[in-house]
Length: 438
Ligand SMILES: Nc1ncnc2c1ncn2[C@@H]1O[C@H](COP(=O)(O)OP(=O)(O)OP(=O)(O)O)[C@@H](O)[C@H]1O
Ligand SMILES: [Mg+2]
Image (cartoon, rainbow, N blue to C red; front, side, top):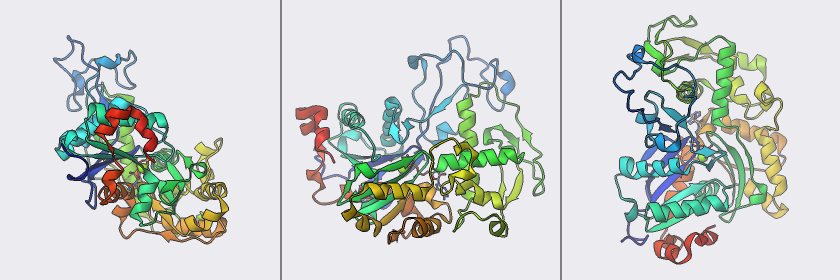
């Protein structure tokens, strides 16, 4: 059996939005797929002959709309459906759910299904032949870590296991064991100081305001402008229309058997595509008159509706730096990114502040919105008042996958096999080995 130093380790970096997985020593993850999973209630024996499909919704006998009101018990669901080809495809009564809440695993069965899918469908290897390194949020808890250890050794029978904190790995990728790591992902934006490879816990700042919140704000602004967001599964035929004119769609009527969670997930996918295509962050504070002069960007929705967006494309992501533009935040404690940085800074000991600020590492998919880095740089100069240096990776992939890449680097270091928890050590100490992981 492998001992951790003679075969490539597997690195799984599962975030709230996407899972990234592949082999230690490689530059990029081999597999990237949504972390949302699907579940379908098992059909009662009688109902199957004329199950509806989006192509034949008339065959349905159930009401469309919300999730099934009489929810089946856990055991009456199909196994979890994982991967884009499964969760993006319409299925009768399929519910979509995320195994994470605030960046921490909450649905362990779903996480197991994700690991299983990673090994069998995406990497095609056996779990018991490769050491496994997984990532965790800086604010993960002991209970969560113990559960990860138990699943890795008891269910997957891995020969060796390690849990690494996401910001520490992102700092490694940047070649900086001491850094201020700013990670803006799908659900969470965090600011975490790392000193000599260790997280300064008391200085962690996090908010669940990141890419998903930007997409949700896009939805609110589109709806306010009477622009309907029709997800792909509802579009029967896309008919071309002139720019700025309403779509002329041949949409399906609401498909019976569609759950609210699937509809929301499918709609969110369109919003995400919209956001990634048109949004940009203003270099300086939002200034309506000057931004209104900037070039517009066109976007065509799945049903053919197309339109060019000007000011709105700046207003949507502005909420990351200036939450007051989003009325949904008016009664909340959400703060702009520079405020998170200031709070983190003031919680750090004075002697490390200057050092972490010389190495500001930016990571996470949401940081790829054009203008993010320039605005961050400007806002730090104006509001934070301490000399700083931003580390900007050479490629977008490195920024997006910095956590995974850090895991790949760490697990391929010559002496890393001394740091793994081996199966033998787990057999001796059980989940108490958690204490010796950083
Ligand atoms: N090129 C891009 N432009 C704008 N946004 C992008 C781009 N690429 C990815 N994103 C956004 O980044 C987010 C996903 O980021 P990431 O993969 O880092 O999150 P995660 O690690 O899964 O989640 P979290 O860290 O919150 O647990 C999504 O909201 C996605 O729309
Ligand atoms: Mg992440």
